[in-house]
Length: 320
Image 1 (cartoon, rainbow, N blue to C red):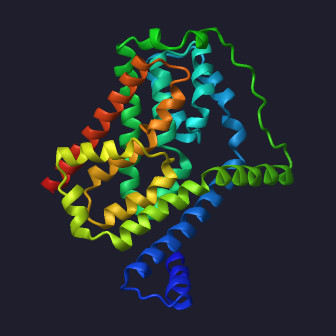
Image 2 (cartoon, one colour):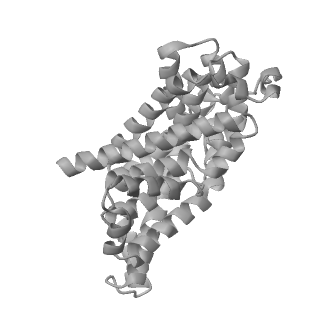
Image 3 (tube, rainbow, N blue to C red):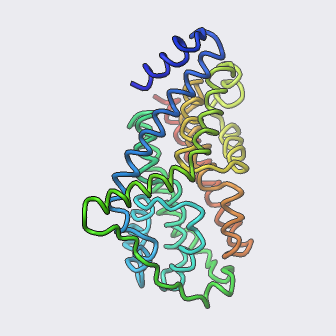
């Protein structure tokens, strides 16, 4: 359906050549923008009916006083189903600390939440298929789960800003939309307007970059720069993702274009994860509640984990 829409707009409406660079790039742009925004609207609307059940305050209460493997599993699971991004990192961090949740469990949640959420999963599956989506989700959740143990072992609590330990997070009002169907519809549509209104620019930027790669960047050039699957290429992919800022949805079309140019799946996974969970803006936001030693340890673990994931999947591909 979206491919047909792009054909009508680009090739029939604008008369561009399907074999030309401009035609290929614009076709990619129109198709992916329509697909991603449609999926975003549908998924966010449906989740809006249930959104009141998993507010940050309710997540905090569910996690209060928990520790051990069960707490980490819950933290990772809640991170995967709650659409919280870096804008929610500070209140969640403060609320988790105030609730007595171990720092390692808190960091597991903060790793899982931006990398894996239900909106990104549906959009990713619609763009690159369920196989890559499953790989992305499982590796993201594994990194978050293991990260809780690794970072907890470093005893990083002393590097949390002092004021965080003294703050008591106020009870957040639950955004319950009411019992009537009309009230739930109004609330769900409000969620669509709020979330899509916040991230649409990242979608357009991501699709625009993907379109330029798809239409104008020669496949052999991409293959020479990032397509050999070496350890160095994975490291460079992670480093390239750090200065960027996007949520999991916005980076999906870039990943789609890179895969289409023959970049190995491990390199693409490492790049996606770095953009979503290791970006410089994300670290600067977390700096408000954590000192540099904690941030450096957090970022170093993520970077090593992402490189490890990329190298492992590239190696598996070469063996198949």
